[in-house]
Image (cartoon, rainbow, N blue to C red; front, side, top):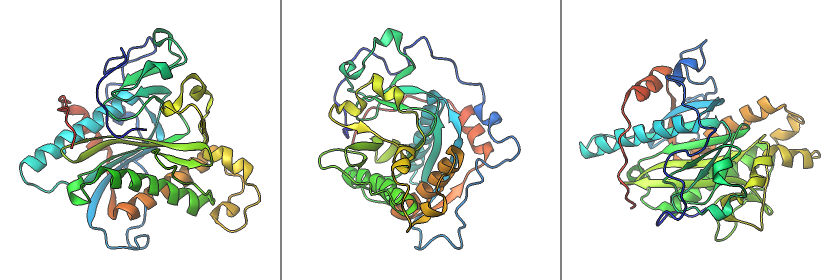
Length: 313
């Protein structure tokens, strides 16, 4: 997927245009983890898991067990971007944020995505369609896919977008290698993470005033059928793969964590992958993960989402 976009060549506006679209619940956070005031119980023990001295803090909203409507997650991101822009303008500390979640079935397009990569009429789409401000072509999000939306102040890291993209890829590559012995890799000239010619993870970002949003999506137990209705990321000569699909091919591994979980069910596989991704994210970006509470989400929902100024670094 491309890094930046130029102009809109398709007719889909920056909001869903599809008969399937429903309004998100008035307060999604009230429906999340009703038995606990924590967003997630998947934690990295701070005193034992960190093998480095973290340089920055990162608040984490771990909603990986939830299928969050795309519009809701998009609004949360924009709200936090606005928060960080305000802090920077005041010369106050601006730490990082991270959302980890699943989406309900949805197609998303980048700013300059072309409708030629849709194998259906947009007026009769099988799922909701959103045109967003990220780079890249069309992709699919749905259950079984772990999505990570880092909202990072690159002033605290490295003000280099290519470094940032390669770092996101590194998070996925490390997680798949260490946890499942999957030899994932990059392909020269392309963004994302691959196993052979199968694309396992897509990446599409936007950066405003060196604050990142949007992010990555890794197919774990995803039903890949909806990808057949599009040309994923505009790449016609490649396939889409998933962690579950690869594990079915790799039943003989004996030298990694996967050997101790030879046949995890879908829930276990998502849980294992989520933990690994968060751990590797923490190490690659050298941040301390601080899990946020439901009250923080409720605060975000009460804040109006202002239009984000269209600019690139």
